[in-house]
Length: 87
Image 1: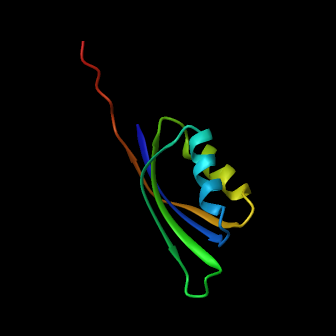
Image 2: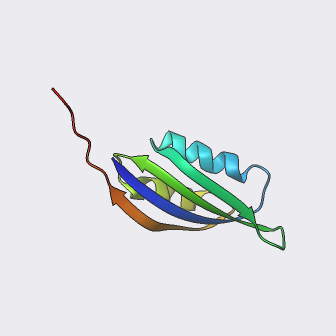
């Protein structure tokens, strides 16, 4: 399972968080942690998110950057965890 930390910058809209969460779910990623803060000007938000999936992170970042109001998406950290199956 791969774990990735994302940094997302976006214009503030009441529905922006719902749009981001929907894309994460539809692309097959699971959210492990998330923090959202609003800038002092109240027009921008910063979202730090940790997701896990067996899928490549590019599938998620490409779709997030296409969202209206998202201004940037960066992968800030990447970790690979090996899953051991017991017989």
